[in-house]
Amino acid sequence: MSKVTRRTLVIAFVIWSFFAYPWFDRGCDIAEAYTAVIKYGTPEGLEPLPACYG
Image (cartoon, rainbow, N blue to C red; front, top):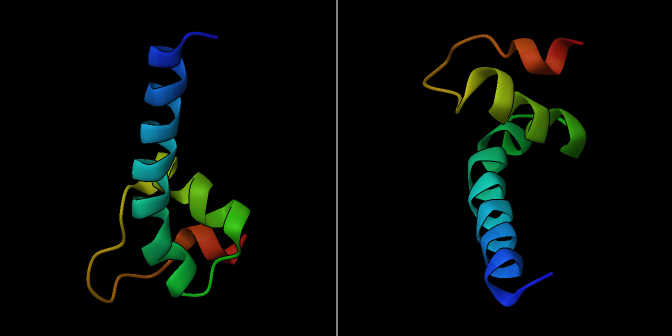
């Protein structure tokens, strides 16, 4: 794997983690939080958290 590819993957993971943190902070476990970023984006306000309810 080249350095550019490795850096790109690390940067993508850091950004994904940045967006997953609000889900984790609202009660989702880690796997649900990362999946919620893909399905729902970031949580806004007091919306229900469909990702955390199974």
